[in-house]
Image (tube, rainbow, N blue to C red; front, side, top):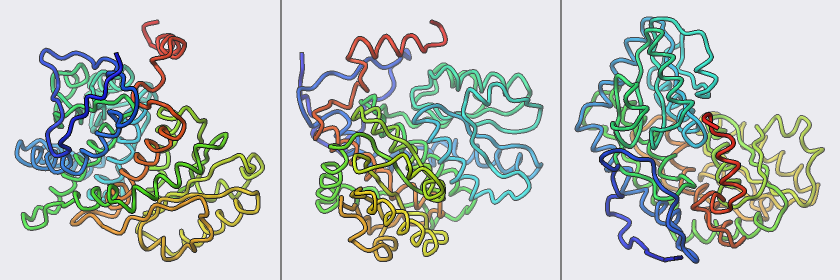
Length: 401
């Protein structure tokens, strides 16, 4: 039966992992918003602080930081792997921890989990899996492959009882489970875990990361209203192209996945220069454009090129939308985003540049998707697997099929 069993307190902990471990079942069906996804987004500011506190207290973030430093200093590879939302979490963790490591010779990198399971690997090196529920087949394969090659393995996951965790030497346990299959907590959790690992390299107790204000900013009334305006623009179109550069490319890829999972609209990612190079030929006034700009490094140059991309879109009759931090909002004129813009004025404190960008855009991209789902009359929680055809498609793609 459809329900609206709303969890009223966004500050309350989410349900923890089952014991014994079992994969989550399809989210309970609701007959309208708030969806489970809605509540997960609202829970993220408080959730983030709990994850930071937990990983600092149990010592797992420090353990991973020390091992990553040892491998980087020895010139060994430090790889992050994942699939789907967790692949974007792996990209984010590589960016955040890699920046903190500052390893020039062998920088931290991210590899899609299945591809990592096929790579030649040799003793010496670290492979860190990202898997919210710890059951992703390709990530398990990558960890097994790395361990068989004599590499150190680690995992950022919700529970150390998962199948993937059994293949990891180090487990960072976030403990709280995303209640929607259109994962939002599943994206943010490894980013926050990576922030705590990165903080170890600073090693000063007076600079603990403070990420809650920037996440809460995405839920302020003005940001919500802006998300609703942009969602109304995008939801009426045939497809969406998400445009970004720098670290923002990670958020852009996640927004593409969220739009397709949660609203059933086709979507694609384009790096800013790639879009301008040739992909405009495949776009018209039935194409939505969403720009993401939060990367603090070289912001002036990035803003200039993004503005050019927006002008090009306007020439095609497109009404672009944007997710921007305050510096970009000041540099990119309002008239270039007639479809609406979400502006985040707050910043995370005591985090690196990569984390700054990723945290600023996490809630806005998720809220934009959730509001698009409302406009389109779609429940985002089951990612369309409540339709027997899509459930069968998912089963057909399983490695055991």
